[in-house]
Figure 1: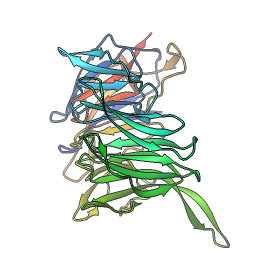
Figure 2: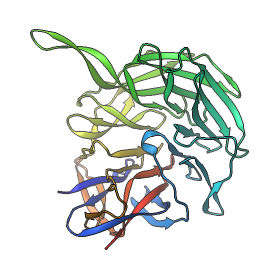
Figure 3: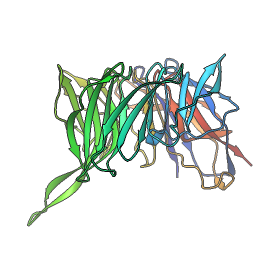
Length: 380
């Protein structure tokens, strides 16, 4: 059976790069060191893989790692990694511990924000990556030791952030805060959910998206039952006020779930129950009908989209439990998917490389021109 992995997709030129793997030859995988790949959405292709001497883990799926706009700053595995003379180097820092916690970089890479919690407070720390000093700290006092800040996201300049807060009755509040220097606004609550899984805020801090379960009453004919339903919600800022979060509904798709956003929150990459991955746009004060990409992801797939919406990187490969475990793997084909005048996608192979595969450990820079990966080298 073939596994299909979306690699870069160029929306503006209707380009989609696909990585296809089929099980034919018996090979072994060996986890390697960090590498980077230059992407060119304009030409619809990818550059050569450039290896480094750095070894660390990228857990971006749960926001334990991040990369800035141009790919020059990375935070991952408790390390701050910056480019010096074109090479990635680990920067020495002290007084900050962000290993194994949620974190985010602003667009410039000059501000790293990360969660820090104890029995009294749930904090978001803001670190200046140039000086490595604490530039600001947001404190949410706990009424009970079990309360916790779970997820968060920041705008491109780190001046607005969104977070979910697990509180006394077992649900999560969704709050938004504005930051100015070391000063913070009061949190504005846009909703309460049973369980949030992903939070997104647009680059300007004016629109947010929330993936979460909520309780809804379902009619089963002779009776009704209250059940947990997984949905995406969104909310806009109107003037100085935030509107209550509302379910994301689009014509032509069932239960769209936000995967990523672009173009200041006006372009969404969503997964639908019926036809898989699609793009929708905010036009004339409503969400457009979906443009389906012909790809249904596995539940463990990761997908990221550049801020301009021109590149989408995805992988569904899950490494074996042992780095040297034998698996069946054939050569991989990179394909360019183009959209014809009738709106149909067709593919054209543009290059071939069977020396490595990409796991879920990857980071796509916000400008879509650099992809950092932890490759698995293929050996006999």
